[in-house]
Structures are given as C-alpha cells and as structure tokens.
Length: 148
View 1: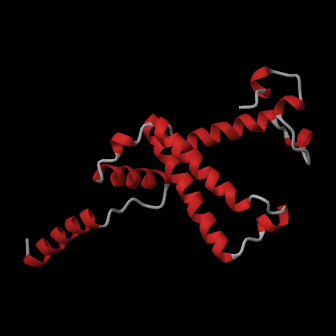
View 2 (view 1 turned 120 degrees about the vertical axis):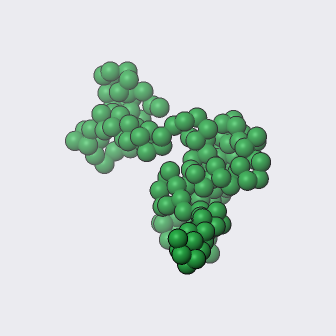
View 3 (view 1 turned 90 degrees about the vertical axis):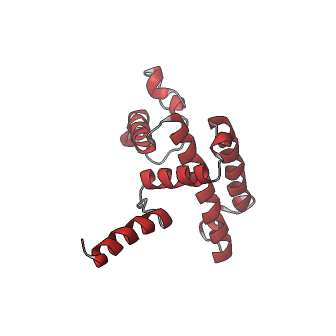
C-alpha cells in the first residue's frame, strides 16, 4: 500500500471519529443522540420517566410561544419567534427520540400504526370538516372509538 493510500485510509478513520456521519434520518438522529449522551455519561439520567418529564416541560415551553395569540397570528410568527419555536420543536423531537430509543420503539412504525388506526376511527367521508373525539362519531367497536 502506498503512503498516499495509507494516509487516505487513516484520514478516513480519523474523520469518522471526529465527524460522525449519522445521516438525515430518525435512525441517524437516534444514533447521534445516543452518542451525545454516552460521551457525557448522561445515559444514567436518561430513564423513560426522566425523559418524559423533560419532554413535557419542553412542550410547555412551545405552548408559551402561542399563548394568547389568535389562530391567524399563530400561523404568521415573526422570524425571531419562529426561530425560538424551531428550537423548542427540536427539543421535543430530541426527547421523543431518546424515549423511544430507551424503550425500543420504532417511532416511524408506531406513527404509521397510529395513522392506520385513526383512518379507521375517523373515516374521511364521515368526519370531513368536523373536529370531535372518536367516541362522539360512533357507537361501534370500542377499539375503533377509544380516544388514545
């Protein structure tokens, strides 16, 4: 192996250690967050209970940005407010991904399962233009009308 090839291989290995390539996916984000916590020895604090509590605190911070706004104003946030909301949403996503990781839950599969359940609970031809709880639409199968 030439010196150049050896250098390129070693550089690739070093670069991989310095700049993790996790990709632009939930799995990549999960790995990056797990690495972040492990490097800081924070995994010991990341129980599902603690992460859930942190998530709800971040969700409350998100709500604060919209408190007292009209429906219209909530859709037209000034740039500085939108930047703050963006970071709150990131915090929520980070905690959500960490909780799922700790519990071994595939978030994309869970979300797709939930959408399928909601498609049965809320058939478009029956609920179009209305926003009610599932139990208010039908007295059918309890599984299809439970509000979870």
